[in-house]
Image (cartoon, rainbow, N blue to C red; front, side, top):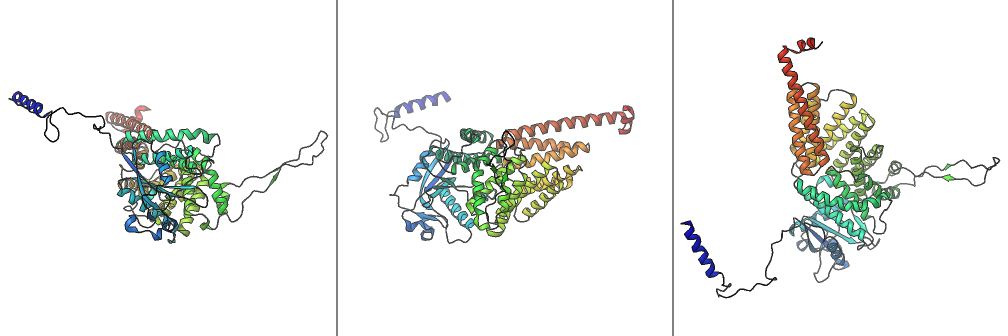
Length: 555
């Protein structure tokens, strides 16, 4: 019966195969232009706003109509008849990035000068730009302006990840370029978009693919930086884009580019600190010994060597925090984050004092002259990270105890609902500082204090959105469980450590952190071996009638 109906179906199909849309029969001729192939849609859409207003009068955000702009403060609608050359340049530069699609937005964004707090002004503008991007089904927005004073192109980037409290300190980051069509400028823009693709990637395969693409862009500039290139022709935005991408990779476990990123933006850091200082900080001139002639005669010329002031001394010379605006603060925070990650990975020995001084300066900056409570809490967390890392390097328990104080202070300033990821980092840092203090003092790790803190961090942190942070916390919890389980011959706690290492491995794999995943796999193997030893020990004890008999038999 089934064969009969299949024959009927073939007959009906042959009758209507030659009919067109109007029901007329005949030969249907299709051209190549009529045949449309279904192409996979890009997984990432980003928007590019205008970089110039319709006219100088409309450039002021106060004159903008919020109903037409669709953003709170700083959005100016412009006529579509006027093309924007800079937006077209950015669109062409980013067209070669795979898995992405551009959306041009006919609006101009600028911070509202009437807002007293510049941090709040630029935050409102960036959130307004992100809101417009979401209305166009885009996940990020490039916006900025052509600075008439400096003649440089100022490019901002905002996305959901950059709008979170984790990146609140570097949200005002501005990438400045002298030549918009320079090949280094094009490469810097592609680096920024590739870094955002890493943020948006979900799953181990997609995350690894996007990280590989980003590292391929950074490798093109790595060798030039090692040779001393500072990209002066294209502008300082190339260095800040490279440093931003290195920071993004460091957040996912790859800290290979931290040292070169610190090196390439260090001239900007010193320039900012020197300009904000009360007076030029210079070391006393050191006079070298005058060379003598053949018969011991003194020559008339003398060589004078002037030592350059260190970065810590430049920071100490600043008393007016208003001289460091929000854009400069963002660059300092980016540099401080790179220093912290270098300390964690033991790549830059001796930079602990620099990190502590820089982050304490930024904490005072946010306490006295603006910024939200989350920004201040983030800076306090970074101070704690620098203290703990420097304590491990110098084996100074007092620094670790100071880190405990800083993390507790940061936890008291934020809510685990409004700033879940930041709260998780603060809780993780608090537990880590307690563990570091115990290890330096060579005492038992108080697991009754540490383990609940780790578990609180895991509870508020979303594994899907922050796989690396979740995996790092789980790995630290597993390490404490394994250490105390081994010391106390506790099979139950060692078994929990094995499970924790397994979960950390899965999270690191999702984050694309291959090195951390290997470390978690090694921890799982150690836990397995310890469980085997404890099982064998228990079997021997049961066979010999107890631990005392085992010791006497062994003697």
